[in-house]
Amino acid sequence: MTKYRKKSLIEAEQWTGSKVMADKYHIQFGAAGDMRIPTLEGDMTLDFGDYIATGVRGEHWAIEESIFKETYGEVQDGCGCCRAQTPLNRTPNSDFVITISKLDPGNPQLEISMDEDGYFADCPVNFCPKCGRKLREDNE
Image 1 (cartoon, rainbow, N blue to C red):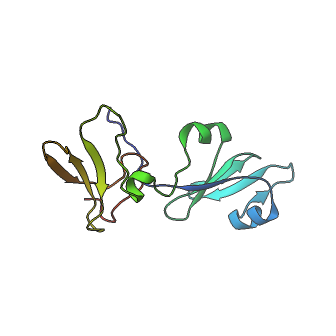
Image 2 (cartoon, helix red, strand yellow; image 1 turned 30 degrees about the vertical axis):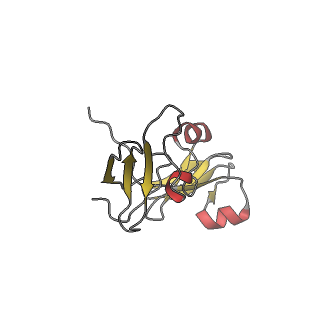
């Protein structure tokens, strides 16, 4: 079986039961105290502490807190490697340097260089290999 990784990022926030969140996500409250959130596949049960995710098309769905924490990690807005050209490799015994070059902002390159021998190689890169931030708009 082939394995796949999602390409897109989601936004999410933990459900607190506030009126502001209830209005924002159109939460429906049942007579028995149950809560439901409308999704593309129909209404979904929502519990306090669940996360409400927003997908690439603006759709919402609930994710149980434990599953959310096992599955998702917070994404920072880039790291030092893709923002400030800090080397990706930081080992004292390394005789080469790997950086992300943004000399041409529309065409970021992963650069590998060796100072002593003058060896240099580069290749196009779509995502930062350290933090996963998308570096270019086209993903070809």
